[in-house]
Amino acid sequence: MTFNVMAINPGHNGSVALVCDGKLEYYIEEERLSRSKYDGNPYRGMIYLMERYPIHHLVIGGTGQERHQLPWTGEDSYSALVRKFYPQLSITVLGHEHHLGHAAASFYGSGFDSAAAVIVDGSGSRQQIDVTPDAKQDKKQFIQAFETESIYQCEWPGEFTPVFKRFADNVAPLVELSDTEVDCSVTTVKAYEAVSEYLGFGFIEAGKTMGLAPYGKRDKNIKDLLIGDLKRGDKNVLVPNYPAGAFVDQGRNSYLKQDFNPREWHDNSSRLPNVARNLAWKVQQETQEYVGDLIEKAVDMTGEDNIVISGGYGLNVMANYYYKERFPELNIYVDPISHDGGSAIGFAKLISYSRMGKDKVEIEKDPLGTLYLGPKYDYDEKILEKYGIVKDATDESEQGLIEVSDATATDVAQLLKDRKIVSIFQGRSEAGPRALGNRSILFDPSHPQGKDLVNKVKGREWFRPFAASVMQEHAKDWFDLRGMEETPFMMYAVEVKDEHIGEISAVTHVDGTCRIQTVTEDQNKNYYNLINEFYKLSGVPLLFNTSFNLAGKPLVENLDDAIMTLYNSQLEYLYLPELGKLIKLSNERSQILPPKSSSRLDVKEKIMEEVNG
Image 1 (tube, helix red, strand yellow):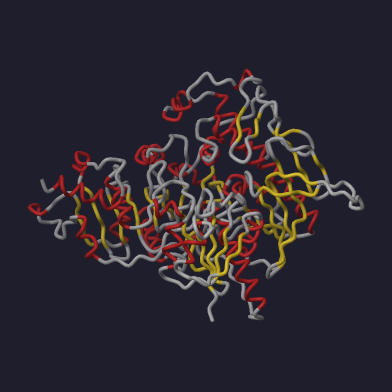
Image 2: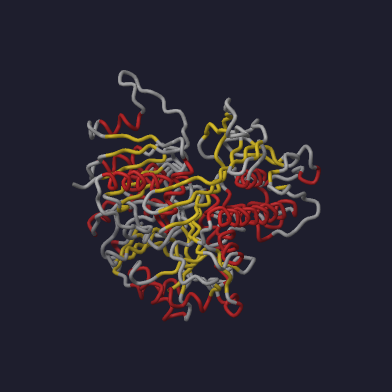
């Protein structure tokens, strides 16, 4: 009998994962369905799965936040929701072991037999910690603080032993034991969050700080952020605010005193102050070096040369590439869904394998081979009719707001060669924050002003770089992969080979790097064929690739989202390779844009009412 485990992360990056007899079948982030960025409480994702699969076990993860009891039954809302579909469901609550979820997700995704898991997070679960200095002491001493960094010894199929834990809280006392550290300073990710807040991004938008960092340099006026042998955050510079965020103490640092409005330089490169760019550089350099030290600690404590990395800092593609240079002898796997949402996968597999072991069922490894794990959508040409799409775009009397035509990969490649921006929608949506050719916006990577042009279309800050999707067989000719054969999940910002930097300026960042996705025909046939057709026309075996969304919005999930994004932007083309169709929006649509507060299906109705009179 099939045993289906559904696990949820109810916090920010709310998500739900489904594992059937040890095999990962689905992963959905709530924001994709609700259209609310970083949305938690994944009710829509849960309902989507329960309508399609029998659920035998529910795992509630997160970070141990209080789950309020509902009237009458006294249940939490997640348990109550699932019970209404499956009354006999069994439930496991693991919110008190957040880092275990990260460790399990990265280890099971790697396919290793054993590994040391390095987890670097802002704040995980609040735990009660035994800080008794002498094991023989009769009276135990305990304090409470949040997980921030952890090292686990991982053994297949399900042994996860914590060998080192670092905790922090706003008022925690300083404790240093061989396997445990506790303090009230700003830790690695909190330092990054503090700088991100200072730069006007908000503490959760650390990716923007990473994009700004290469514009900076060492600045003698900026003190070290992480100090001492243990690299604790300097509380004269950084102020903790566990569990949410941290701040730069401007009052004690005259050089860091903001005499500028961050929003001014977000939109205008000429207004970027040195202190902003150099502080971004500083926090990137110091934190990646510290995590490198943590990797060394993991090797020393476990003897492992297999390292898996997860937690929010795992999304730092600059740091991930740095590890490849610093540790060429190690086998390093970075979880591509290393933010909190990905912990749902770890918990689902952990419980699934535990049950299979009890039933003495043979457990096969299920390494993460694809990120196309979102919902399946069945649609055909008829679905386009509800948008008023004209079928015969050659008849001028019938042309309207939207036109559709037959299109091959060669046709779309020619549009890209002609420097048209083309969005693409196909297949199952990508798990995690990276667009991998199923929900992407594409462009010519050789356009000298390509970065500025697409940033303007998407409404993003001018300094943010773009990624590239490259045919795997050509990747080593164009990029220094530091020993990697592939990087299909876009987890590394790699150096562009010197001879090609000037050829792909739209995707080459100011430091000469590019975040890349290697693509094979087996991984994504339609997308590979499109890149190949562009290569035939241009001699460049890669495409400029960015996520199919506008600034501050989640990636598009279904076809409604895709077409509404076109309506609300200056995007002109949408390619549907599964149908062999190309949608083109009229330039006149700017006169009838729907209100930004509108959503999904009602947007189409309002547009068509105006179009029809």
